[in-house]
Image 1 (cartoon, rainbow, N blue to C red):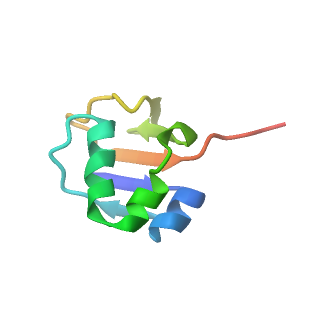
Image 2: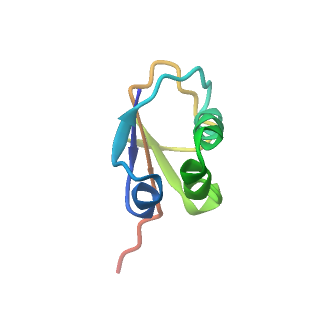
Image 3: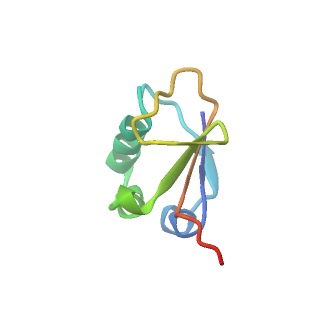
Length: 81
């Protein structure tokens, strides 16, 4: 699956996107797999309450299932004015 990172998440991980082979059932499981990889992922996902996630370009929760999903994107909350 294609995993995309935006804003400071991308800065901490060091890449804008990557293809990830995963057995994760949910977004939270995917995050746990990524955090276990390297410290840079642990730094990016240290506080998931400060992150939003989109699954196949639809906003989702971290308990969203990943079966059949092609793309997951992580980004900070958007602000506007």
